[in-house]
Image 1: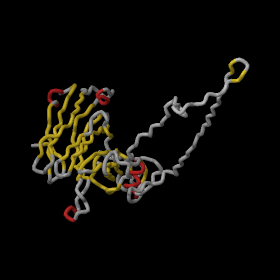
Image 2: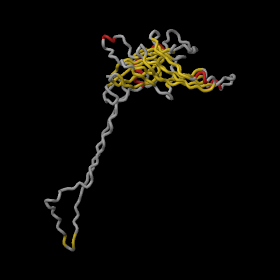
Image 3: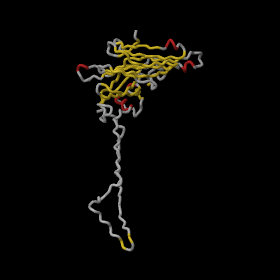
Image 4: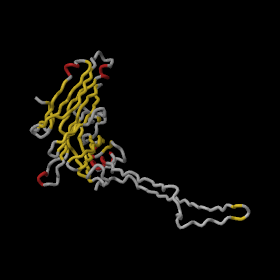
Length: 309
């Protein structure tokens, strides 16, 4: 079962409340002589339930929640960050939580936590060094599973993956864009393509992108599947940009524009993976020229999605 780092002992307190109810019979008088208490007949019930019993409904059963991001980071890097979501790990690299994703595939309910880390540092660290556009980060992940989303059983660890690819720039990853939907498509052979919408801000321009991953639900313990990777990063797809801050600067007249695309999956190619369509809507400078739909297909040689020829 999945070993979580102990967050602290749980204590459960139980309390019982008891109430005592006493009833008395009062004799009423008629004239000077006390009246005899009436003797109940055989047909009279010994007691009567005037008030229905009060029942407390049982609390609804809650499905076991995935582990916390800090616990997932510990699972990936085997180093405790004391609850932090970004901290230094081995050889000066800094690990940072990215996001978690739950889904159903292959008869199981899965949960994957994604993180990334900056490059390791060997030798003296240059405190004045500035990350460059080509300085990417390493993508890591850990995956758990159980029978169903509503199961109260504990999660079972499937594996932790120290690297599934590289992405980003300036030694950081794009931020998850909550204004666009995460998209996924099952392939029919136990795999799934996952497209994660992100934004990346640099030099006054906010870029919209999709980071694309491939998940394989095959039984990795089978000899026939030895060496197959559960997760793989398979491409960055541009989905527009907005230069609002750059065009409003005092450095000179810069034409403003905004281009933002949405992703849909299309037909499956010879690799068994769907093609991806980015439909762009544009405003401002060159809007008509930048609107439209672009198709991306999986390139098996480069193991990345690339614009279709």
